[in-house]
Image (cartoon, rainbow, N blue to C red):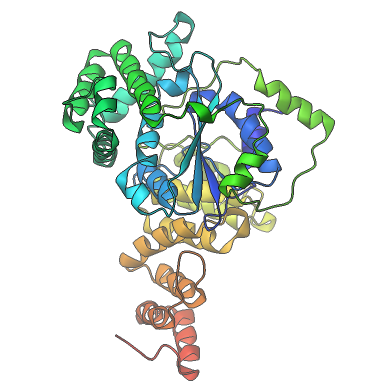
Length: 442
């Protein structure tokens, strides 16, 4: 079973944010070792949140905000950290650790989030330089960070910088004087540590990654989590049940051949594809569609879409959403690809793509993410897109997860859409008014 196949199966198990779940913290360099373990937990039916591929990390869906929101929900009961050489040097991992115990997170929880560490490498807690065989991978990762952030660490991303400084401040404030002294921070402040990170970043990767490693190691020491170390092969069922991780689906029966592939992946030493752990400013390239017909409308559109043309990206998303062989568009219906192309355009400010993306994420079970759907529909509706106003009205009229039903708000949105000539909005408004609903125009 390939890494891509495992990722695709995991995507088919959407977690339930309203029920107890485990948050997975890991270095994306360790995907080949992490995915098999997490997939087994999902196949057992457990409610798991794992960020697979930075799909949603565009400028309008900053990964830090997404991570903070996910950890801050009271239903998040456990953070499982896959400790390894790579995780020890992961800036994103450090930021997740700081957020787990930040004041904002703990204040919103009835009970503090538990933290377990899955030990991928026996020496994962050791500091030190980068082995020669890993230098090319880390060099590539650091160069991408430099292109993304510039000469100042997190310089172009104020959300990351603010979250890091606040997290460091909360971390230092939570330590006893003895612990701070033992870790070498008796008079340190978040501002001083930030300056040290900046300095190490400017000095290059041979200084930056070891410094991050020291911070991660000291975080684990300060939390006294040694008793929570577990093996990748450990049976976590008792722990999950004890801490309230929900079972949100029946266990999946796996054939012996499939299980063999997953077991083999536990020990695979394949060189990982590098995705920088803080790469929220670059969207993941969307792979080619091998089934796309040469010379079709879709292929002609695709040529412009891959060059970043938002109009072409939105149009291509529509081809995948409404694939019609009679129109010779050249693609089969594929809602996941539709979402990815709509999102690529939406992140560039294409209003109609924002509307299309929000509609799909709200309505279609295969790709449903109602929290993100509302964000895109609100954004497009504020820019006076009549369809977005109508769809957002549908959302308020329906209500449900992430949104309290509000018929008056729905009617107000229908009025805005109808005023722009959208006939179905006027019809729906008339139907509401006939029943006496939606008559409050305030």
